[in-house]
Image (cartoon, rainbow, N blue to C red):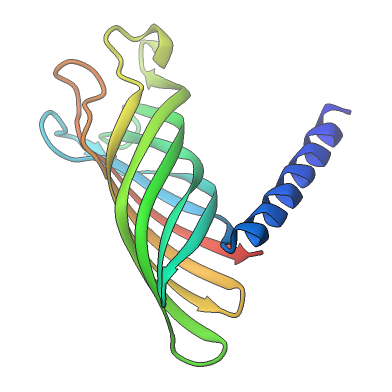
Length: 193
């Protein structure tokens, strides 16, 4: 019953957001796909990529001509693997991007776009997996849940369908003297309402 109610609530929210997007003169885009997560910078020796997911609801609003601004909400992960499964860190987070972009039509059905800007993120849940046991992020001393950084994206459109590549680079440290600089590569399929 809970799942059914969540599905109905999700459909209602998506429908309401679609109507609002049309009223505001913008475009609502549902995206989801693969995410590659890692960290770069100080204290990242032995850290390798951790595959995961990313889903989001974006809103593009035209500024002038082909130029638009974009915001939305993205749910996904950030994390890393240490020396191929000696230890792992994975946090499920919420990101709010704010970018500016340009969309260029190649034909009547095909277009390309690019955008650049920033994001703010907060980790909602997650854990550190280690040989001596799991530690929830809330139990980790000096763990810093918030991150912010740059976001660059490129996409190809066919009518309302979109394949998008997004690069995200965070700047916050996970904890004092911990890894800094979350790096995410996102490959997502999207549909514009």
